[in-house]
Length: 115
Image (cartoon, rainbow, N blue to C red; front, side, top):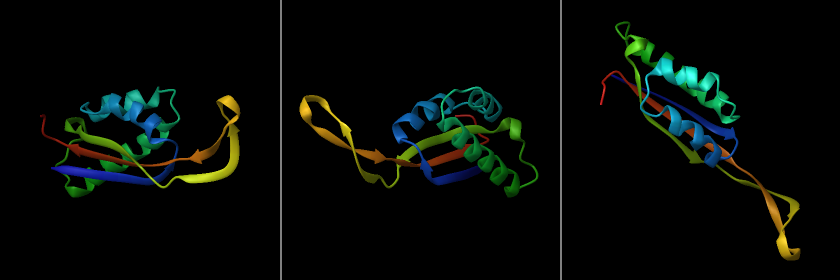
């Protein structure tokens, strides 16, 4: 049995969200929730919401699903649309860079089979 949840257009850079996702990949759901709860990263809250949604999706598939048996099979973050603002940021040697506001698409897939 597999369950999947996705959050799209989450504010924050995918590079920073991947730091959190890499920690919970392959772990039991209860352990992953504990890690996310005490993480100091901003992306941890959004990832925690997606994980709760995936758990709810797994429970909807059938009453025989036990949450304690679920594992994080896949967890990844993709780049969403990037908004380039016209504000400039000073760069070395007299140059200027544009500010970029990055968005992320977070996907988590759970399974009850240990790999």
